[in-house]
Image 1 (tube, rainbow, N blue to C red):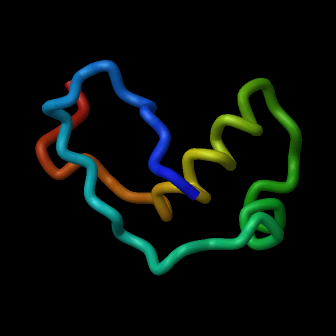
Image 2: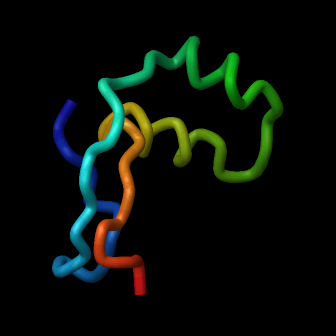
Amino acid sequence: MPELNFFADKNLIFEHSLHGLSRNQIDTLVPHDFKGKDFFVKFYLSNNGGYFSGGAY
């Protein structure tokens, strides 16, 4: 899956921290529906979770 452009600031440093999760694993960990869940799942599937090493500000 190609990287999705989630952030307007191209200088944000986003580092991958997980080995990857499947859709089923995400649904097991986050079983409830909420507004934006599709976006959240798409983000995790394309970025394997991750974190902002320098902060997201």
